[in-house]
Image (cartoon, rainbow, N blue to C red):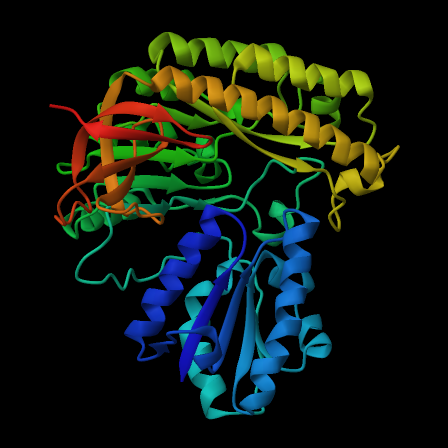
Amino acid sequence: MKYHIQTFGCQMNVSDSDWLDRSLKSAGFEKASAEDDAGIFIINTCSVREKPEQKVYSHLGRLKFFLEKNPSAFACVGGCVAQQVGRDFFQRFPYVRLVFGPDGLGMVPGALKRLEQDPALKISLLDFEDYYPEKPGNWPERMPPRAFVNIMQGCDNYCAYCVVPYTRGRQKSRSSREIINECRELIRLGVKEITLLGQNVNSFGRDKNGLEISFARLLRELNSIQGLRRLRFTTSHPKDMSSGVIKAFGELETLCPHLHLPLQSGSDKILKDMGRGYTTQKYLELVDSLRLVRPDITLSTDLIVGFPGESDEDFQLTLEMMNDVGFDSSFSFKYSDRPGVRAALMGPKISEEVKSARLDVLQKLQQEWTAKKLARRVGSSDLVLMDGPSKKQKAGVYSWQGRDGGGRVVNIDFHNREDLTGMILPVRFTRAKKHSLEGEVAS
């Protein structure tokens, strides 16, 4: 039976879906060329915010049209919403026959085989494991130039607004040996750049009671792998950013000058209510330390507006903090209550009207900073790893897209059809656009 995977949410979900895609092919399933050609519909979900969760319900409702045309077809729901809602999906959507949480991902190919054989069967894979569940890579003969590598699962921070510890479980660090072996295999298959993934990579190994190396040591071990050209990681928690990781930005050749460091709010009062474990002063000290060892580092962040009790003054402090740091980019969201988290019981709640107005102001300020940062790159040069052809092509030339060391999107025009995928080229930046750069190969 043919399958179709729809992914919502974070890079960890993207990585999980990539693994599932490879594993289903390895198990003999066929990937549908289009959604309406599938018999198995798999939705990998996110519940960090309310809007992605509602998208899941909307998508399941839309699938009814396809499923009514094919009585043997069925839907599967995985990821954080599946962990949160569980078997209730079976009652709300009768054509859902499999629900699986993040720890149940490795058992999905086998479960789908069973579902094919027994049309009346429904399966839930929702148990949490107390260890990191290793899975076979099922790698193809050749990989794209970039790859994600999960180094941990879950989180122990229990920030007041965050549902992750309840949907992905407590922190479980992966074996550093397994991580290193996977990275070596990916490089053998053509990968040039690896991004390490985790809910809080800075705390890697701390759940192992001294039986695992630190995150800073892991970075150094990976830096020594022959053939690795670029190394990145996400996401970091400011309270756990060690001096060893900061030093790594100035000392490791492969570690890219880019860090995603979630701030969430510029108000110390709100940060305390969120349970973030740091102050704005501590955050600014981290930024200063990072820029001291790597002046060209690109900084991105996460910001929440409208957290319960956020006053106009609190919001203004967030804007001031944005100006103090000067983020290259940010992901910003309106606060929404999530089931079971502490903030759901906090007040006073901020109206949707006020949250929307604040978000608009914040995003306009970020657009100004992003434009400034990109404009400063014009005339400079950097190495760009080419991903493939640009989505938008111009007449008479062949446009290619890649990313520089800071993670910025770069588009380059060529006059021949040579396949540049995976090449690392010296590029001089000639023009700044809204969210990207244009450049030309430097002589």
